[in-house]
Each structure stands twice: as C-alpha cells, then as structure tokens.
Amino acid sequence: MAIILAIETSCDETAVAIVNNRQVLSSIVSSQIELHKTYGGVVPELASRQHLEIINPCISQAMEEAGLNWQDIDAIAATCTPGLVGALLVGMAAAKTLAMIYNKPFLGVHHLEGHIYASYLAQPELKPPFLCLLVSGGHTSSIYVKDYGKYELLGSTRDDAAGEAFDKVARLLNLGYPGGPIIDRLAQSGNSKAFPLPEGRISLPDGRGYHPYDFSFSGIKTAVLRLTEKLEAEGEIPVADVAASFQHTVAKVLAKRSVKCALDNGLDTITIGGGVAANSGLRKYLTEAAQKHNLKVYFPPLKFCTDNAAMIACAAAQHFNLGHRSQLDLEVRSRMRIDKVLELYQ
Ligand code: KG4
Ligand code: ZN
Image (cartoon, rainbow, N blue to C red):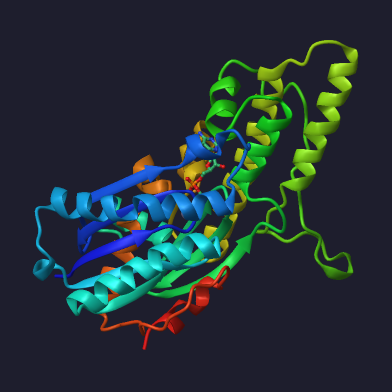
C-alpha cells in the first residue's frame, strides 16, 4: 500500500491528486483552456503564472476531498519532465517544499509514464507487457511497456503531434481551440471519403521503404491548407467534409500502425492515452482493427486520458513500492527519453 500525493503542472492543467496504489482518493484538475483560448494555443509564461496562483488551493482541495491528514501521506510526487520548464518548476517546487516540511520521500515522475499509468488506473488488473499508443497535444508515441519502469519507444511522430495537427487544422478552418473535439463533432456529418489526403510516411534510408511505426502529420496539415485554399477560391468550403476526411486519415493511420506494431512485437494488448483517445474515429478504427486481429484494446475514461495528477500519483506509487526515491535536487527537464525513467531514482 502506498498513499501518494502528486502534482502535475507540465502544460496547461494545474492538477493535484491522491491515490492509494491504483485507487484514486481525490483528483483535482483546473484547466487553463479559457485563459489560452484567445491566443489559439498555450502561452508558456501565462501557464506558469496561473499554476502559481492556484497550486495551493488545488493541494488543499485534494487533501480535503480525500479526507486525509499529512501523516497519512507516504510520499509526494511531481511531474519533472517533459514539459514547459517554467510550468514544471511550479509543481516541482511545491512538491519538494511539501516533502521537506512534512519529511516525506519525494519522487519525480516522467509525464509520459504518467499517461501510461492512466490505463493501470482504469484497468486495475492490467499487467505488462503491452503497447501504449500515446496521442496528445504534445506527443504521439507507440511505447512498448516491457515491465514496470521499463519502456522502449517503438514509434513516434517526426513533426507535429496528432492533437497538434487537429488543433492546427481547426485553426486554419477558423473553428476555434482546442480543435480536436470540434473537428470530431463536425466529422460526424461529413463525408470522410470526400477528399483523399496523404498518410504521412517516413522514408527509411537508402530507399528501403517506410518506417512501419513512425508518424508524420505536417504533410497532412499542409495538404488540408492547400485544399482549403483551392476550395475557397472555387466557392464555399465544405467544412464538415474536410473535417471528416482529415479525421478519417489521421485515425486510420494511428490505428493501422499501432496494430502492426503490436502484432510485430508479439503483444496482445493495446492501451491508449492522451486527449486524442477521445476521438470517435480513432476509437472506431482501432476497435475494428483489434477485433480482426484478436487484440485487446483499452480506452481509459477521458478524465484519465487528458492531463491529470492521478496518473502521475499512480506511476509514483509503483516506483515507491519498488523502493525508488528521487533526490530533492532533481531538476526539471523540457525533454527526456521514456526509456531513461529509472535515472530519476536512486
Ligand atoms: O492529453 P491532452 O489533454 O493534453 C496534452 O498533454 O497535450 O491532449 C489535448 C489534445 C488537444 O490537441 C485536443 O485537440 C485533442 O487532445 N483532443 C482531440 C479530441 N479531444 C481532445 N483530438 C481529436 N478528437 C477529439 N475528440
Ligand atoms: Zn499529457
């Protein structure tokens, strides 16, 4: 048993949660979407200041909702990488201070490992090995979960993340921010076959074909830009058809490459994490493709897919139980490879 309080401030959500291993005792998420909406994306400086303003109330609320006192907490954790450095610093400084004041062990957590742990929260019986497809606004990765804390990155995007592509396409269609949910909704009434778009493939050196698991979304985004320019010149843009065609292409590529990745690596389970896991096209294609190949697919509830601190606390609980601890001088890092997470601990 490990009761962990964790803080997540890597991007535009200020989140604090308390878990007992895989059981969530409280989970507070304060989104900054309204703050950044006017700018069409996250403004790092504003994000840090907003984290600073509300972190303490979020901590108090998490303690209150869990009905715990500080002596009940076994360790304090915070996301230390990857993310916006100024934003990460706020959560890390708060967590280290609490660890010092209350004399508790401290653990830094890799944000992407947190996203993987969202599936453990939702499926308490889930065990490695499995493949995690992580599709958020900042990341698109296929991660081979070999064991607790042991990961191999099998595929990733070479340019835009999947969610970022949704946001950029929504922006060029003047639909608003964040774009994913808006495109998803519009796509329901559009014709997904109206406009064929490129799948975005990464060439292997020496003409040896294409990388089987990597992604590229900038080409699709540029193709949508050219398409809308052409359609606009011809008359009105059939926005729903463009949205449906774009979503169809991205969702199909994500589903196809992750199923291939799981099969090639002898894995029978795929889990999904990140905001794009909400996408109805991705859910449909991945579920269909998995059924065809006898694979299990787990989509955690959206509250655990998008950024939250419960997933960070759950990852920290596993490390805590394995005897892992971080030093109080652990620094924040804007990037870190997922296969290096054990370097965060002694
Ligand atoms: O995981 P997340 O909340 O934050 C990051 O860590 O980035 O993901 C946010 C991303 C945004 O790009 C948003 O447009 C996208 O997830 N998203 C969606 C959907 N809901 C959210 N993308 C496609 N379809 C959706 N239904
Ligand atoms: Zn995230």
